Length: 124
Image (cartoon, rainbow, N blue to C red; front, side):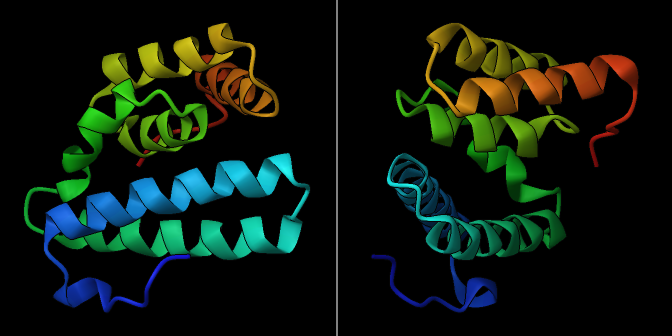
């Protein structure tokens, strides 16, 4: 379980580590069909990303190493967050999630790629 952290007081490296921990827990929650746990973790992940984005230079770039994670959920969520900042690397990571064959992440990555291609999702 993750500890409570005031995101605005945490170092960027701490937020990246927390993002990785939370998205790893999301993977576990999705495998165990724990929707409420997943949703709570998702909200925490969004708050971390909002904090990183608000920092000078958009510190979501610190998530770049997570595009190489062996955990498909970590890779998927990092890729989605990085689409606006590193679109080629993020797209490649999404394609690697699709190639992994791990559901439900494959479906999420395919949907994101389709939305990007159709222009129905514009990264921010």
